[in-house]
Image (tube, rainbow, N blue to C red; front, side):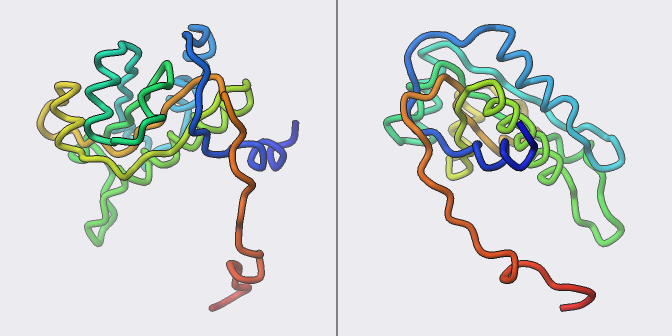
Length: 169
């Protein structure tokens, strides 16, 4: 499959089949996140893998959609902003590093037939409490991971002409 085919295939899955996913598949997804580039190669990320049913239920208190905790795995991507590269104007790139890593993981999951859904609209304090995340580590993104029980909705994307500027604005 070409990269563009994979990018087209990946979508937000909001229904998962019950049962565990193969350990090797989980390791592949995590490896994709590990291999993702980070600014200045500082690698300020941490991934919390949540498989326990009670722990997933605690995470659902932070993001209350019914489908969320039904996935067999939830990965929480966290950043240690103190260890992330910072640009000269003070812009910390930890969030960018996390976005790249999670994107790698979601594409890898799609490539091996698993579903994901980027979740950012959660209560970070509740996630921190549910998973005993230490001070200074920020939970940024959660994604359920599992075998899809339904297809993603068709993609609606802007035309290139609405996004691309040639040579200058």
